[in-house]
Length: 124
Image 1 (cartoon, rainbow, N blue to C red):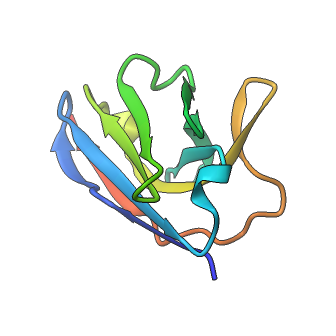
Image 2 (cartoon, rainbow, N blue to C red; image 1 turned 120 degrees about the vertical axis):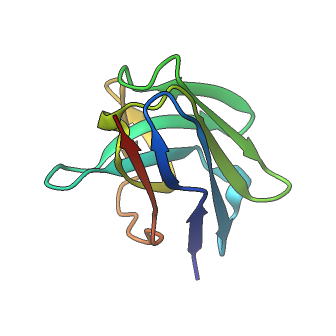
Image 3 (cartoon, helix red, strand yellow; image 1 turned 60 degrees about the vertical axis):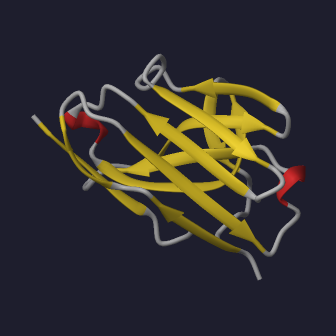
């Protein structure tokens, strides 16, 4: 049974930093490209960063230069270092197996085992 546990969220002021973690179990972690997704109230979930098994990260334009995605295949854990946070980064953040389609980070087709997410709130 696939289980994803996101952690590390919190409330910070604009310009602050947070580091998110996602611990995965129940699947062969290293076989997947992984991604971070976020969903703000009233908005659709969007992909913000993704990383292949041995690196090669990519980012959405909205977070490029501020966020860094990384992974530890030995620990089945995904990370997202978020610097220079802005109020528009406020959202619930999730991790999931990912793909890139037409330059956009998306969850892999048919995937539905989302974790509980971790809330990030940035105040101005």
